[in-house]
Image (cartoon, rainbow, N blue to C red; front, side, top):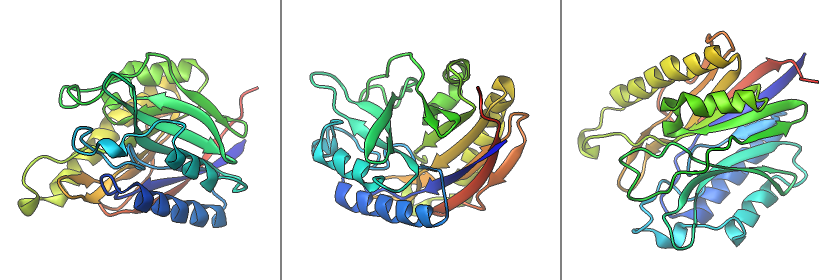
Length: 258
């Protein structure tokens, strides 16, 4: 039995403020290293913020951009693996919603969100149907992003590819006017989504599922926050208290596969 120490970050990423967002990633990684974390999970589009590509075209990044190189460098010599999100350029076509995985300054894996919902279809392309699974030590990790929660195939494919833990990184925007925002109801909605659907994916596939969600207010959109961890029987191992930005540390007892 081997314990995987995971930090689930509920981050408020400012739209288009890549330098500021990277600084927050760096601070969280530094603190996670001090706590002995193996895997730190940032939400969907954590580096770029959840942007409208037409409004923030300069925040659309390629994987070989200097900004991504700076993110990779944050993990050099750290001993941990970090997964973070961006809007990825796709020349001549709508960009991808992408999660990248970094360890010791190297790009380890890339996942492009497969399940692009109607609200996003005018802005983003769906990723290819292959699952993304990568190692952290002896443990295999799969990736799902936000609305993938409504596509059981994403979780099934990760499990079939050997994932023992599936990371669910999200930034679900809340509906309604910001001035009259009910954080309680917004968080309660997303908490119920994860408690119902991520728990089901965990139980159906016999894997752990952990979730990290964007939190807080941006210039034109709010996010519900929430960190959650589910066992292979669907039981909730841990959950953040509310919608606030913060970090939920979880120790997952995973048996390494031979």
